[in-house]
Length: 179
Image (tube, rainbow, N blue to C red; front, side, top):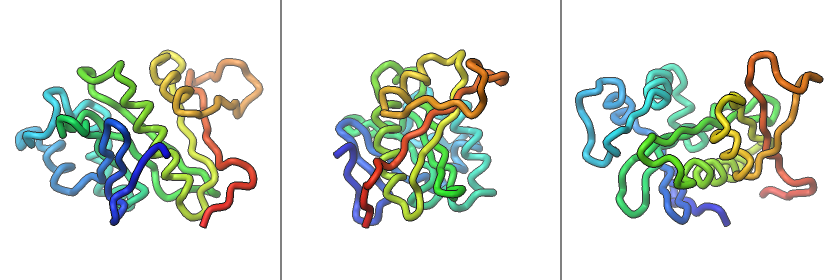
């Protein structure tokens, strides 16, 4: 099993990480840039975290169980990134995004977190596919998705997409029975 959940589903735990739902106070702290909680890594938040924090007010579902989460190390308790699901799904498809601060990159955290959140997303009612877009100029992000079990698929006949972004997906196995 790639993750365990808390009773209220606000936390997912993996071998090394805790993926916990954002709070409005944490989003405000990211946006203010002044009230730094003690449990943030020195280089958190990154630019992507600021973008998500700014969008949370307009997307309240992203605070929910199938929304966005902070990535914290289990050992230190430090927040080292964020990832999230862009809820609600469209025709059973849900998009995922992720980022880990520079000081913690190269440790497999993004892969571990992405694998766990994608598996969790596939337990959501009506969700059968999790997708992600990644710039081909970011080979580390491509590797994250490949290691997390996603497969590359093309929506066009061109070998290289014109916008430099390729798509990956993870689907519910055929015949998989969800309760």
